[in-house]
Length: 463
Image 1 (tube, rainbow, N blue to C red):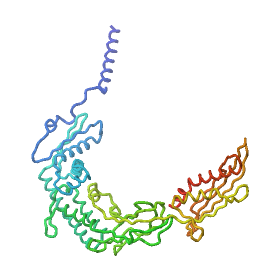
Image 2: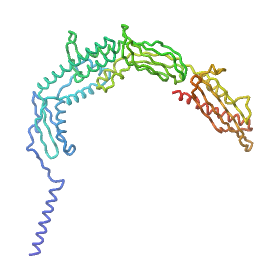
Image 3: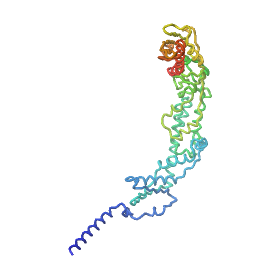
């Protein structure tokens, strides 16, 4: 009897322990309801012709403590998706036709803007079970329409104010101020660019986005860039003494002040210094400090530089509008010649000066192939080259003779005195049936190595 009582107590204890363990197991039956019975708006989606309705849900496992906030955000996104976005304006239609973006991309952006711009919505209810949080929002259609109408009028008024400022600046020939004002005029209209919004301007009823776009188009396209010279000459590695002047003017001849220009080598390369903005009389001056490309025909191009004015990051649609504008440009042709060269050289073998030179002819031929010209007088030269080449005997083995050549070369710009190139080669080997032929081969090999690097390195030093 005592043993049976003991076994009963043990069995009871084990059952209790097992029961406690089971209640804490992850596979236990979840608590279904944490905030009362499931509400009617979750059983059947509400429909009310007077309201936009949004319902969102968020996983507690995924979002944790922010599940309610996530559900509310999704509810607002659901609400905003019911607000119809239609495209009725010419400007957006034109941008779509030009491939600036697709209609789907624009509508997706417009819906995102609608979520960020929602006002007047009201939080109706929330509910949760163990795994999911739900939220319910609604927005009165009449209230939303009234808010949007008020915003549209405010946007139109601000845009008109900036447009008038831009027109005044354009009349005075101040391009930068006029362009900046037109960009600022577009900003408040961006949420409504898909709509053909009408307003009064100078006693006329106009669609403001079209009017503003036309003003911006005329502002940019009614400009002519006229260079002082369309064809000039220059030398590689040298400055061009005369300054280049670019005149910006309207078709009526009036000067365009404060116009930023992008002046650059369209073909070739060089260093430019000077003003990149037109002054009070519509002129910009630039000077070519040096030409660094060996191309015989190079092109300098000047274009209107809108990026210099729009330093701030612009909304994508405004960037697309600006990119479609045709910008005035002009080109200047540069005929480039190579510097003239005076060459001094000494070539020796075993301490004796050679009468028949080996390295100099190969060096000259290499440069003349590239369009360089050698002169007989230092005073006529742009560059002065000094070449020193020496060869010494090595050893003889099985009837084959070895010599070693040492070559050094430097190039000086005679106008500035600057050394623009210096190189030396040591113990370049030559092997032949006698020392003289071996020396010629050593000189030949040294000249080949020198010619492979000299011009690229000189051009690099000019940059």
